[in-house]
Image 1: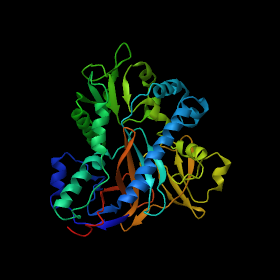
Image 2 (image 1 turned 90 degrees about the horizontal axis):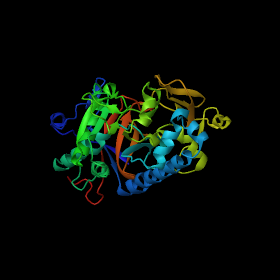
Image 3 (image 1 turned 30 degrees about the horizontal axis):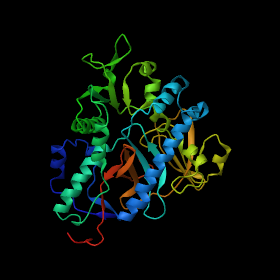
Image 4 (image 1 turned 135 degrees about the vertical axis):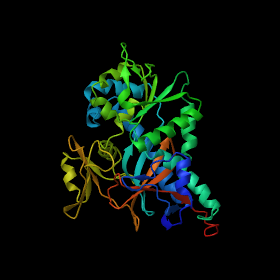
Length: 392
């Protein structure tokens, strides 16, 4: 694994606009960064990223299966008591999942380490699945990267196949905050993939979803929402005033309710407890566990937080990074600190995508801070052809 400085495509911004990528800059800074790329060997991809992601996914499914039969585990995972039967039933009836994303620490040496699992509402999808693939094919043609370069990226292909396996008997609604440019861009891409799979699709702003007299979800045209794919976390649904109506609404939710068991940092100590010493896990405990005090270098995280909010990195007896945010209430976990890939560009975290239960691609976020936040940049990657390396 190495970070390589490369020239941007001369017309990359016009290309982005032409393909509907409207959030290449966010918060007044560059988000999509093609002044560099990360290069991997095929062995690094297959042995150190793809295989571990597949194994981590299996471990998470085993935990969900166990938790679906254990009230105490559901409590530890942060599932409210009123929703536990609904979540467990969602697992038992095998409600379909489309995607999730593991965030991994990997430096090119040693095994990749799980930082967290974005099992419910993972963003970064469009840029990982489509735009970095487009970049790679054009970069090869322009001689920016060697012509033998490849990319670990079958995300779009697997997405379309996953949507294709869902029944097409009604409109598939997609929901999120339409005012958020990144969220709306991700949802537009999801809708496009579902449309390619043969679904009729429609967007509904999450704030405009209603209910009819039978407590069925409805859109602004008073159409019943039979299938809802959304970028709205389950823990928010659980807290919403209308949340109790969802289990009896009859709506098929994507991601399904059982994903609430996995989209929480509570899985980190529970996985460690079940697989102590696993090479792809970091030692982790709930904050109140006396064993948490044995960690000298650790990251303290709320069970539910996003974009690095309320995360504290502790090393050498002091807090070296502490992020503010709105998630300070509730329970916490402590996870052993580990090294991230570090370069002149900052610290890199690898997002490993699971689509339709398959590990199928990666996207890389880079930040000046060791805690990946909302100002991180997306940097594309290639798999180097060792025989053709350096030959444009």
